[in-house]
Image (cartoon, rainbow, N blue to C red):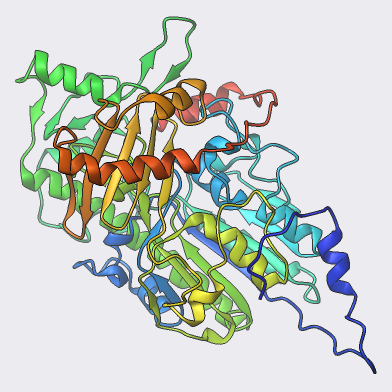
Length: 509
């Protein structure tokens, strides 16, 4: 398998692969590349899945699949947003290298090399069935897909799997395919049909159920530091110019309210907060049911053992570890540590677990490696193929740094033991580069956290010993952004009023 990185010239890879090397006698035909299915469980935390050690049995079907696949214990997303995380995954670039980080202008440019566009160039049939929201065509996620269905507003795998299976039944069986299936099952408001809402806390009776069942579908995000503020407009502030609304001061807004009126809002008990978590876990279980039905359908069609299958999360969800239930306002592990499973054709190496930290940036180079080509030169990720066969492969850096970005002004670098967060400027903006270049490690814009299985603890950067731990992380962040490619200069996509209302109803923009 190819693991080096070479520039990608349009059409070159497919043409070169078609010609055998000169040799005496007829050359053996190269083995055809496997087809690929990528399944995305949106907003799913790794540490709330049973296969990752969670106490509740939230994911029996995921666990069964894990026994046939290679599980990456520490995979990290490059963003805490669906919009930017998938753009990063499909291009193997940081979000700020793709487009300016703003809700109404971020989109994948038409000339960007994406995983689907490269596979399409190589002759793969490409199709995507996604659950709407920030994966609709307007944001450019349809680049390189022959078929792209996005007609559900924050829908479930329940909605996207049936048309995906229908497409599989109608495709050309003689050609390889790339199929992307996505669902928002674990996304707020954590309300799912049947018995899944009460699956893990059926005897609870209290205010959490009223909040979860309110007219506003995201009232759970009005809970801050154990108090519910029903009258506040959750994380939306109006700019002084125009009516454009974006979330930029969510934590500041609630913190200010708590300081000015500490008795305002409704106090919630630990039991109330745990019930929100139980609902979230029930949402995972609902998505897990859909995953199990998908795998059973693939087995029936004879595709399970002949296809490279990847199951991933795009970001997680803070569940009051930092005072809130959300994923967009922090870059901690709760939002960034995501599941990643890769099932090789035939289930080879099934049940293996890889402890080496990896990124979602690595998915594109991995799939292209199995397809017999290399990633574009701009790709930041590395093929995981060597780790699939040998989790201790020496070719992989033992403790690589992981970088992530948020549309709220923040960037993060994580080592095996610590995370440094830089706030106050949008990654990729002139202000961000100025701050990154000139600020010292004790600048208030920086925050250092010690990370581990029990959570994250903030450290005092005023302490010289702590500062000495943080400095290498700052140096790594500066190096990562050296030669940062400027975003494509392309007009913002047209956002129609209906879409704008959907996004506002879901707490965005």
